[in-house]
Length: 612
Image (cartoon, rainbow, N blue to C red; front, side):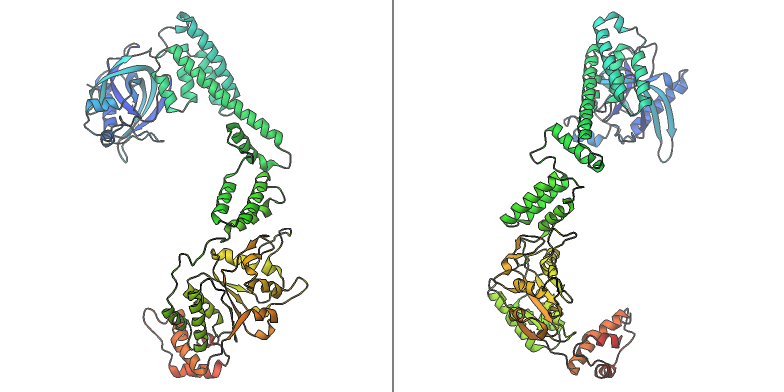
C-alpha cells in the first residue's frame, strides 16, 4: 500500500492514507497548511513522493484523508497517550512523535467516523534541525471511515465517499427547489453579515464574491471555514452529510453572529449616550457596566470593578470593629458610584485602603515565642556593657509583664545624654517580648497633626505618625519608641505634647481617634517606650504619665571595654582588614589613649570616628 492514490475523475479510491488531526477541522472547500515532523507523518509523505516519482502523476493530483481525533476521554485513554500517534496541532501546527505499533481497534477508536479528502497542493521539505514536511491541503469532499487496513508505517483506511468532490457534478439547486430556497435565504443573511463587518474588508469582499459564485451545497462549508473557530461547530457541520441540513445549521450560525453584532451595537449606543465631552476616560468603565447589565450580572450597587472587590475583601479580612466596618462599607458604596475623575474619588479610596491595611485584630503575641526570663538579662548584656541598675529595672518590668499580661504596665522613659544606648535598650526590650519594633522620631515636631493626623477635608491629608507606624508594623501590639520626647515644640498649629497625653494615658488610649481616620483605634495593646535627653523640658502632665529611668554616661574603663569588644572589630571589618585573614591589630594602649584624650563625651558615639 503506497499510502496515496491517484484520483481519476471525481471519485475517491476505496482506500486513503489517513492523517489524524488534533483540535482542528479541515472542511471541504477550505485550505489548511500543516507542519509534519513525526516519524509516521514523514513516512506518509515519503510514500507519496515515492509513488509520484515512480509513476507519471504529480503530487498535486493526490488525495490524503484528514480525520479529526476524538476528545472523548474513553477514546483518549492512557494507551493512546503512550502511543502518541496523533498530530499535536499546536499554534505552529507542529505534530507530536508517533508510536510505530498500535492496535487497529485502538487507532480506529480515537478517530471520528467522518473525515475530509484533501488534495495535496504543495509539499515543501526541510532537513534542519530535523526532517520535516509542510503540506498545503485543499479540502475536496467528505468521506466515511469504515476501517483501518494498516497502522504502520502510517495509517491507511477503507473509505466511502459521502458527497461530490469539488463542485463539478452538476448543480443541486436545479434539482432541489427547497435547497435553492434555503441557499437564497442563507446568501441574503450572509451578505448582511459581511457588509456589517468593519475589519478585514479585503477578506470580506473576497468572501462575498465566493458566496455569489459557489454552488449551494458548498455555501455552508465556505461560511463556517471563514467565520467559525469552534471545534464542535466545525465537527458538527463535517458530520452532516445532507446539504439542506448543513445549510440550516450554517444559517443558525449566521443568525448568531448577527445577534452578537446587534448586542455590541446596542451596548455601544447606550455607552455613547452616557458620555460627555469631559468623560472620555470613563468609556471603558461604562462599557464594562453595560456588558454586565446585558448579562444580568449586576446588583443594586452598579457594575463593580475587580479592584474594588479586592478592596472589600481586604476590608473584611482586617476584621475592624462593627462601627468601623459599617462606616467603611458606606464609603465603599459611595466609591462604586463615583468616576475616577470625581474630586473625592482619590481621597475616599485612600481612606478605605488605610482602614483596610490597619492591624485591627492581628497581634504578634498570638504566634510569637517570647524569650525566657532567664535569658532576658543575657539579651541585654549582649547589646550593652555595664548599666546594671537600668538592666535590673528592665528585667523587673519584663517579669511583671510576663506574670500579668493584661495589666497596664508603666511607660518607661530612658533619659540621659546622647550615645549612652537608650534606643538600643528599647530595641532589646522588643526582642525579649518578640514583638515588632518601630521608632517614631518626635524631635522638632510642632504640629498637633503629626500626632493626631490631618482631617480628610485638607488636600494631601494623611494619618498621624502613630497610626502610620502601626500600619508599617502590621500588628496591634508592637513596641513603639517615642524618641526625643523632650524636643517637641508648640506654635499656633497646636501643642503636640497635649496630644501625647491621650496617647500615653491608659484610661483613654483604648479609643484613640486619629483625625484622618475619624474612627477610634485601640492603642492599649501597644508597648510604649520613650527617650529624652533632658526630662526637665518635658511638660509636667506628660512627665507624670511615665517612669523616668536615668541612663548614666560611660566611665573610661567602660568605654575601653566597649571599644575593644565591639568598636575595634567593627572598624577593622568595615575597612577590609579582617578578611580573609587579620591584617592589622590595634594595641590596647592606643585604644586607651583615644578613650582618655579624644572621647570625653558621656556616650560612646565618638569612639568609632576616632578609631576609624
